[in-house]
Image 1 (spheres, rainbow, N blue to C red):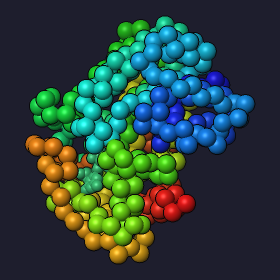
Image 2 (tube, rainbow, N blue to C red):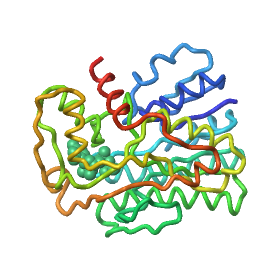
Image 3 (cartoon, protein in one colour):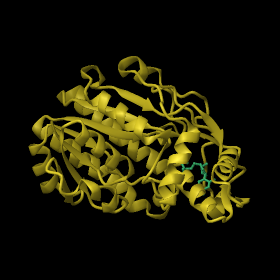
Length: 319
Ligand code: UDP
């Protein structure tokens, strides 16, 4: 198949490119290298099944041309990372809403199948767990940037779903919970690459808030294998799926685990959310996915545990 991956030079997109090329597909990556990095895909450069196009999903003519040429689209391009979204709210909102609208418009024009990645941010402050796909979203004011981001991604989901309902465009929505692995950068806030880099340099580990908030981290390899299975499943069309780990850990314990794995001399320092992000910032206290749905349809069982995941990030940064 000829596959278009928007955001294919990003952390997740580049691993997806590797997987699809290894599976004998032709891959075209569209990425504007805003948060994605050429070095993530440099090893694919020169492969005759691979093409990199530097450009934006906001460029309608370019997206039109690329979608027409491909069989299926994985739409991963987005402004992600809490830190990035807080620091560049306008750009993030426009990319996430208008950019996705353009990509969906083109898959509609050429009637191509699309898998669109959404986020666990959708659930907002709902701390029930494990969260099922049809659970309620609990959000604060849209004037708080984080909830604006959650809403923008919800608009993407609505568009994708309604294109399926009304126009029969084959769309699949995937909500990614915290995803980690080699090539992820801490520059946009993501906690594990940040902690690993701090630990490797024996610097203070910056725990935000009380550190009692918890997350579940899944290795990117387990994520992308599931994305491909969903794309290849007829029954996934018109549906939304959670993908994530259920191995829950508090951020404070995560910091300790990173110190232990790296044998670092680092100490934990606690930093208020106001200092870390902005005045009035609200965090999610807990976020655990229910993955029954994806497991029933395509079989989903993480193969790499949290310790293995952290070690893979440590190895990457040591190199
Ligand atoms: N976090 C932290 N220190 C950091 C970066 C993040 O304590 O240097 C916390 C953050 O406040 C959140 C958790 O780690 O509670 C996960 O943050 P991340 O941005 O990786 O993902 P998300 O909040 O989107 O789950």
